[in-house]
Length: 106
Figure (cartoon, rainbow, N blue to C red):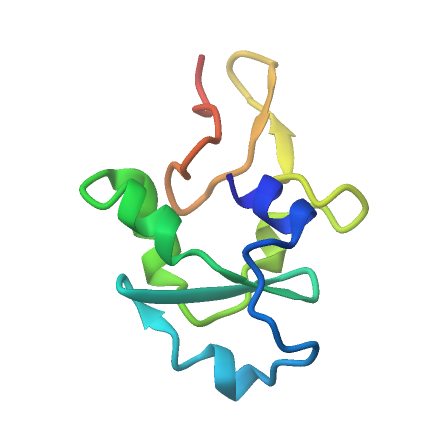
């Protein structure tokens, strides 16, 4: 969901330039923005959609902050790594599961 939101831009606030101090005030489950690879996303509806699920905890913990380190700069996709036990390429989610991101262990 975050990758799709990042790529289609329809979830971005309407202003062309948003300062970090503007993003930081949107840090609750009822008003949640994050910055991601130079874009600002309003993820409030995503938080509402998964309100009672563990997968929104990492997003709420980083509400109002930059989460670019979770994503590949070139593709905009969630970073991946090779799982040490399975050898499979899996999403890198060190803070816990995220909405619409497959689990790290199949």
